[in-house]
Length: 396
Image 1 (cartoon, rainbow, N blue to C red):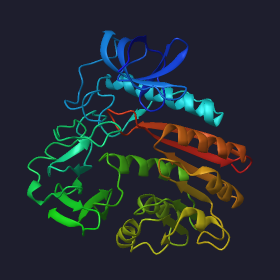
Image 2 (spheres, rainbow, N blue to C red; image 1 turned 180 degrees about the vertical axis):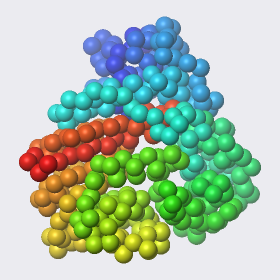
Image 3 (cartoon, helix red, strand yellow; image 1 turned 90 degrees about the horizontal axis):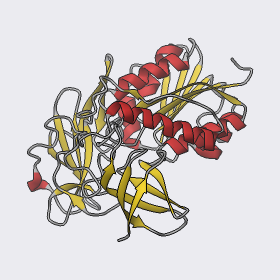
Image 4 (tube, rainbow, N blue to C red; image 1 turned 60 degrees about the horizontal axis):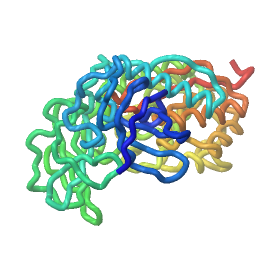
């Protein structure tokens, strides 16, 4: 493989930093701005090269001893930023989001990623999915590889989460879901292709609590990985949505109705909350958890169909919350939302570029960004969670 000595520049979206070699842009992983590194090129195809820093010749002051013992260019792909001081990483994440917003959304913003909960960089993850290899051992993938690392000491994981797993129940090809729920119980299930999901420890559903309310979430369904995130996000959504009694709110890509519960408190018994998601398991969990709130209706459907003419969202809303997948909501959904005349939108994104593109689409359709916050919801990694409050110009 080609090896280069590079002086690294600004951070880029996705966990790399930008360097140049003979006029060519090289995206370098495991490096920090200002460092000089020996980099091994991993991909020479196309206009840009990609490389891993395998030796640091001149380190940044923000570099620390890796907080994750299994991560790195030759390790697992779990904690790709474990070598960065946590405060510096939050600053870098803010720079990346700001760059994406300016380039893709035409919006100028400056800030840093805020810590979630106590801000601890390790031990924050309460749920994880592993894969079982041909040897019957569970592991974590190397970066963009089918190869598994079976050393499971990832620093993200809550203490004891993966200790003494029931490996005798694993089968090659299984997806192993492990959750430590809010009652402190551990649950382990295996989901294999064309095989029935099997509970190896605990139960199929995990108890998750936010405030005084609890959900029973199937281990294979979505719930926030950071154990403090549901409470932090719910509080922000309630503050920004500011629904008035008797109004209508939409919870789009709503999962088990985490935000629907907050919106229901605001609209009151005379109001209406519509929650839409394609996950049948998530919607079932939401119906059970929110059965005492008749103002909530949870529907299993795509957001696009629900917003289309004759869909479940007919009649409009006073506020909408969107928490789309990593790819974002996209042009069609935002067009439909704007056509419905929703005056107040809270848009959430866990990928900086997709979030920035969506913000740009809203702005093209007459929405203004009132507030924007970025959370370091995935410490030790390049990932972020972004929130934007958007209002239609002239709608207050």
